[in-house]
Length: 79
Image (cartoon, rainbow, N blue to C red; front, side, top):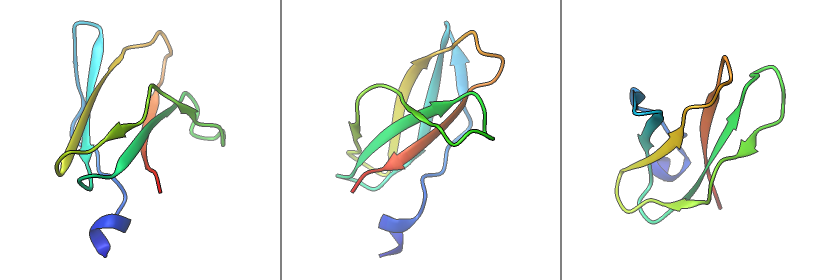
């Protein structure tokens, strides 16, 4: 069904107290892995933290703000 194959969509990111609050659309009872990179031209993404299980239609995690000039994130829906 379309809900299980649609890519996660991030909501506006909020920064406070040295952390980012990342929230994205999710499929309940499915597992996600947050990944990060500093260069979108590179093909390497690094897993950030443990996998997380969605309990409803949105999923939120908090990550520390890094010293990198740019930091990109994606949420991978795991099989």
